Image (cartoon, rainbow, N blue to C red):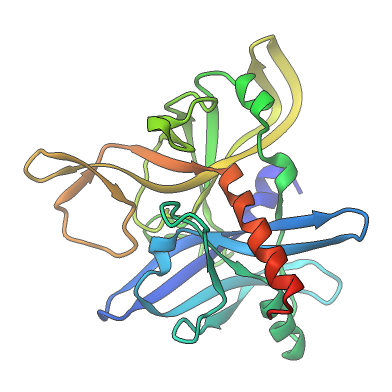
Length: 279
């Protein structure tokens, strides 16, 4: 598979039923944390925004089914329910101001094993999160790709997310508004919350040193919000909504994303849970 195809298997469609009776959706993605190369161990998790699941009474993940020999069955999907009222396994970011949560994939895989169900997915690695040095070597304007489910839209027949292109609207090396965030210039609609954003080049790409040939992938961050124009003309900042609403807020095709490095803050929490034997 090409890199662009592989990342379509790293996302999951998250569907929510909220306690107020509304339904909504968001995007999650699978990433390996707490990687121990010597022991060949890691803790795979699904990451999304906190506001995607906030107030939800029922949350489901949709996975692509797999064959016994490890190939995807694109036309078949398996839905897993998460019990929010009993904790649901959600782990909130240690900083309550960071709009991220994660869900350990291990219990889901154990559940599927007991049901004799095979799923197919790929997972991101922390090794593609830009280091500080890498960030400083990026261009002020980089072409980017976002993978997710805007307005809950996907290729329902092949069960694939939507890929969208844009550019970085602020230099990635800088912290937008003093936070570990950056701004993107691309259309950001409800359902895009939790979408991973990449620099993904297949063939050639521009650098400060000139044109480079080859393949490059960097996991930049997670979309969570953006500026909106109210019907009155007032400009406000808001989370990307999860549910369809009357057209009283008009996006201006800008979004704000949390830098991927903030996902690493989950690792001490996960290791403590593992050491404590929490399942």
